[in-house]
Image (cartoon, rainbow, N blue to C red; front, side, top):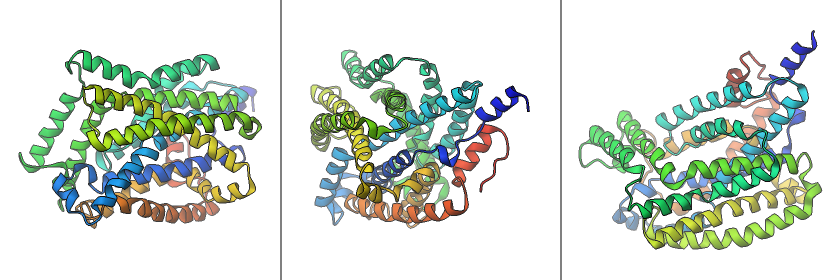
Length: 417
């Protein structure tokens, strides 16, 4: 085979099992736990219930504490950890492509187009809280940074993390005139009216036993997300974590434990800064809610979120890496490895389970289970997924969704086993 053909074949090949770094898979699996917990609270209808409905739940006092704990330790941190790992994966893919020769951009763009397709189906048809669509769009932007030096990557990442605060200041200075959310919210309201009349709510639509109303209720929720992203700078936060992930991939891999002192500094600093910011944000959200308020208190909440989320996510990553470096820690984290190897499949399955448990055409538990039950439920679901993932990977190389994604990316039939 000519060398150019060999190089092309080498570049356009998915990662082999012996090229995977198990620590990264364990981190992905662990991140799925926090993402599932946060998503189940949303699936349960907690955020679209009236105050009277929330107060009527038998676990109402404990629910408030559960949501506070989630906002303090989970909300934003685990998708940020996943975003960091996305950037690490990008760095590894780019490094392998450079070693084998050939071009990287077209391959990665196809990969992102495939992810975008999966994400849009998931967002519009299943779960309005989808993160795949945003990851795919920001992944396309990420290609522009592939040749940037490490120092510049860090500067860009830090700058992007402050975009939400800058956006909030602009909205305050213009008294909301530049707020991008209202057109999306108006379209969402129109969909709700079409689905259930002027008195329809997201709760009533999503808990309906009519599949078309559930679909339109989810669609109405999903339509709000672009405006919310632009309003809160979520796209900038995701891209910032991607860039930090590239830096980690270059600086700390393939052996992050060789940089133990750096990991300890990140753990200590991230916990100190992240816990302080996250505690303040959780306290403010318990009193102000999650809406973007164009007031000094609302600005403080945005700043606290910015200070709390990324440092705490980085601390989680450093802590997991240090834990992996001990025999006992590796035993504790090893069940997360198969979960992480099938992260896309497991993420999509979690949405399906949430839909069947809480929505009207499933068990219709929406509004009947308080937020305090969501963590034990998440642990149960993830435990079952861990058993399934381990069993599946004994016979197959990839998870089902990962395998389909690879067919699109590499444009040829790849063996599942």
